[in-house]
Length: 65
Image (tube, rainbow, N blue to C red):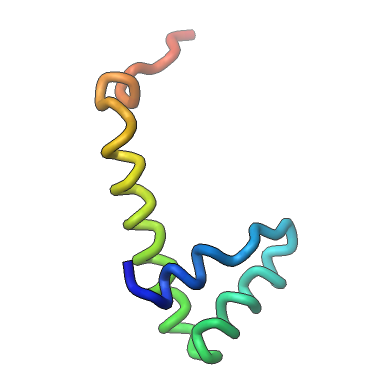
């Protein structure tokens, strides 16, 4: 994960999405494309980390109604 992606994904979680988006933009120096790319990289890194810890069988299992 890039340093910028780490800084953005390490921001505190907030219920106010406008405020959270503003924080991400500030960290990215005000460039929305940089903020979006960093968030995507951060999300990808988190998904890869979860994939290593969660078994594929557990993920595929679904509750039947």
